[in-house]
Length: 226
Ligand SMILES: Nc1ncnc2c1ncn2[C@@H]1O[C@H](COP(=O)(O)OP(=O)(O)OP(=O)(O)O)[C@@H](O)[C@H]1O
Ligand SMILES: [Mg+2]
Image 1 (tube, rainbow, N blue to C red):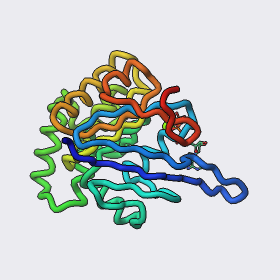
Image 2 (image 1 turned 180 degrees about the horizontal axis):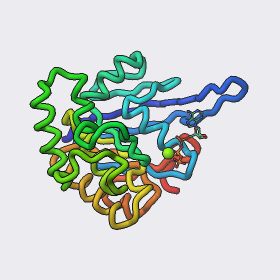
Image 3 (image 1 turned 135 degrees about the vertical axis):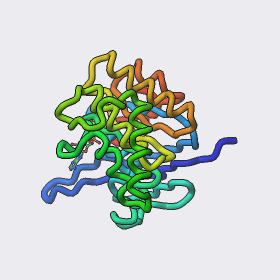
Image 4 (image 1 turned 180 degrees about the vertical axis):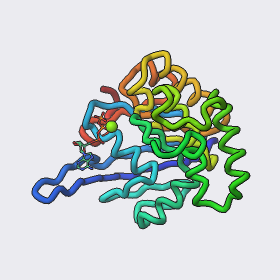
């Protein structure tokens, strides 16, 4: 039996905006096994990004427990979370979020800077990942000098910099045409086949078909279907 890698137990996220409090997640429960490929679907504003930000150690829940590899991360400080994120999680955003002042190669080496990796090793490793993404000819370009599809492939390469166990992708094809989107999905599919655990947020039923299982969220809570 495959082991549980990610578990959210009765997780709440309440954004406190002073006068108003937004209950983005209202007691959500999710279990994801090691090596699984899951899609998260739900209407706009239902809490998908909030949920995967918690899974990706980008934020902390208001209530409830989140286990990564059996250890409860819900009460860790932001700096403890970022250290876990750097090692275990690769995050891919809809808006790419590349650093425009760094080259493609530098963007991919950046996450390795926080670890004890020799600069020469970092560079070789980043080059190898980028070549695997078909970007070997774009290493010294800046993000403003490449296409949207290429930007997202750089972002996927960056997410792989520290060889994370989990890839979290929040609508990674949302800003791409369907052909470029399919390229990204095929890369995620291959990463899944190589053993990575993939958590994909998508609005698109066709893309959700890449996943082995769909988790549906509505109004910050689990539902069986939309
Ligand atoms: N930083 C924040 N501060 C306050 N409210 C927030 C914040 N982020 C999200 N929200 C609110 O929390 C709710 C859930 O937002 P979330 O971004 O998780 O939805 P989503 O399902 O990802 O939507 P979309 O499909 O549009 O990306 C929404 O009501 C949103 O307005
Ligand atoms: Mg979102």
